[in-house]
Length: 446
Image 1 (spheres, rainbow, N blue to C red):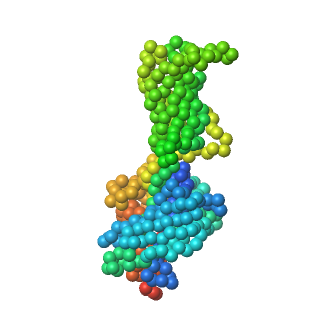
Image 2 (cartoon, rainbow, N blue to C red):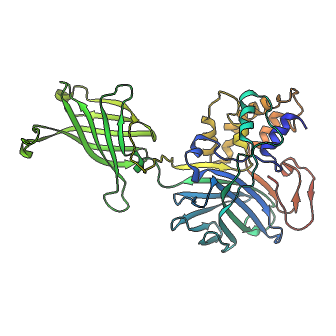
Image 3 (cartoon, rainbow, N blue to C red):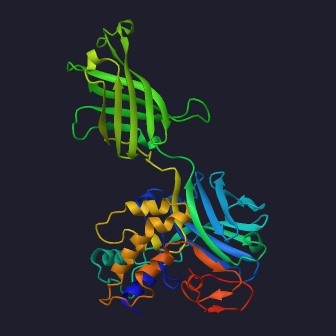
């Protein structure tokens, strides 16, 4: 086995797999939507039951929870039918409910087996079974020089949250006539996105310090309504006089808009302050748009050119302070992560030095399998060709880079439920015969 193939097998084969932990900036920032791995096999005690396991949240502990704002999805394509099972968590993530087509349903408390209609479900804390030497992989990636050792360092020690779904296989394909299933999982954030309470604090223009804004994120005015924002922009008018431009608006995703900001003048310093002397004057619109927990943009449109001169513009914002014990979260809506075969995004996307990570997020967000090949196959082929040089010999890999990329780009686990076991990587995909018929079930090695 070549060094190049050894490296790949360490990362994607069943004997010593890499996981999907923290494989992109988006998933790293959203651990409750960060899928680790997917497992797929036939129940060895019941040949009529297909078992799937999704693990989520790297380095989980007893305080870790599935998110009630994330939908955990399982996609199953039999060629005849493409179905999706959706799982949501409620009651402070102590209860799970999974539903699918054809009456598939199961609901109940976590850390116990739930018997439903056409399927069983279990959710809770379990050991992470993967071994992955992340420092060695990063050294190999940076230098394109093999840096794995025996023994290595396991970067994935500890626990993970597991969502186990066991499904009556007759509900997954056309009355048993379609025995090849393609399975992948996804996490879809459906709540708690964009601006959160942790954005409360002082913000300023780091390039032009001396003015800035205080922002407070408030509860909805009515139950079920949007969060609100109160802001004060400490700035100056066109004559060098200090002005506080203030207002209240609503939050929508990563943007908060104050449609009728105002400023005041006429008052005197206490004890000579008289509320009757204060005049409230319209300013215009303030819009705060954030790209993360520490950076954003203030866009303004004014209505008093005589007072302020410029009537529109923008100011870059950087966080200056944060409220104690109020962490900031900035989650993006929609699909956050996807996973089929282990380690594909880690090993074949943006793997070469100085190629950035943008394509890794795009990979995880791609929700239509029909788009995967045109979007990512060329990238995979280029990286596989580079990895093929690790042992100094080109062309001694399992498959040529172009062929292997065409197989791996369909990032779904494939199982032949008519076969009992599989002991070869990519056996179903490549039409290999190493499938043992010991009982009516089948297990798909990842």
